[in-house]
Length: 470
Image 1 (cartoon, rainbow, N blue to C red):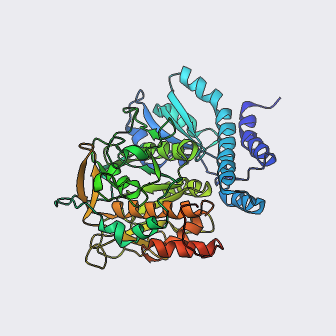
Image 2 (cartoon, rainbow, N blue to C red):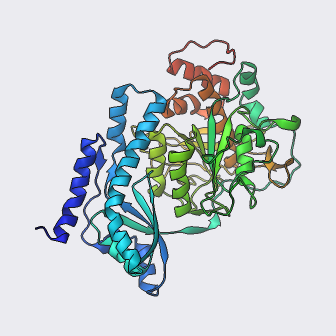
Image 3 (cartoon, helix red, strand yellow):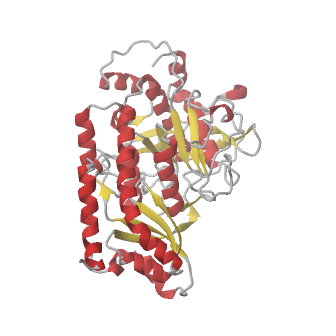
């Protein structure tokens, strides 16, 4: 009879074999020399100074992960439609996560009875557990062969939102909307109908006159991972409400702010106080993939340090594999060179090593918005930002009352405008892939009629007047 240690060593191999037979290609982590090496250095330091009864929240990534590149090749050969590709990606991620996490459950149950682990929950977007455990419980987790890495919960002390306050009375018509040619496209019958735009941000107001009619509604349309608000709220900064209004505002009460007024929206309050928290970001990212499933996703915030922080890349890759287009604010750390931030500066993304759709800012009088972050990209993206939209003197919804507005500034709002443009393109071409949308949009100043013409050519359809039908 095999010893328990022998069984533990062979179990990951058995799981990989089972997943391979199910048609899910896997990638494995590099072997590590000791359990301590699986623990992030900052967490190791915390464990050394923590009292034995302290309970810490950590993210535990397991060894078995879906190989999205190989899965994408399989899907490309299958000729599956876009919705089917999304469903198959989510199913593959779910299958691998459920199998390997269930194998770890007996250990977690035993550790809970021993007082080493207080709670855990599994994620799908990456094969990850969010665990509350004592230092001894975390060390015991690191000793498991299924575990690849453990990082502690981190909340950054400074706001991560890519926006700045602007002390001016708001105008009634957004020059950013007209500058990109959106009204011309509306006259052709495109307003974003049938498209869903998501946002991970400070929250969103479902009672503001610009957003009330566009909220999709239901359990799959709002998440507050802290569990404080069961309905959409945005009570701290108003940032998410304003950015979302630039994308999908209904242009109610003769105030024109939104590029895609016919699109619907969903939201996750992943930065409830405007600060980035890695656990909340993972929970929102997972919910967007498995429950919300928007067509376009706005990420209007950046990490505070320069250089390349790839901690979010597995989440971004999974969205893209599921045909969810992430649109990133470039950040407001310019005008110097090398002021880019992650995740907007990512390169090497699924599929084929693509760069993130990073949106920089334009000034009203022409030229660049002075504060827009600039490359060269710390992650090696050849162009940063890839796209530019209006980023100052923009009227935007504010959740103080259902009819309050502010004059907004920052690349966050430029990203909202770009996301609305993507929704217009998707109404015209619902089967357009993430890469096709990026190729149509990127390459300078945002021009929606021009982007539609490019997407027509990419999709092999002759450009012609629209009649309101996709």
